[in-house]
Image (cartoon, rainbow, N blue to C red; front, side, top):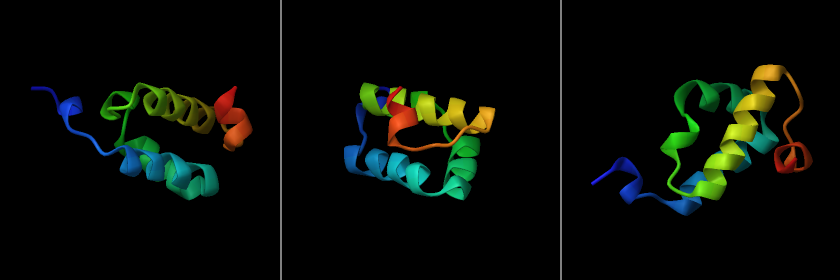
Length: 67
């Protein structure tokens, strides 16, 4: 059994949502989590985008994460 076997999509969505509305949340979360921590492949990809945007200093919003 892997860590991704049990996951909460709503919790993962909440993490992504927090990053979209708060740069300080993004700073904290990107130090604690990696995309592989997400059970949902789509949310893992979104978090990878959040992480890349945060590290580059770019703005994080729905449009930039979707790109």
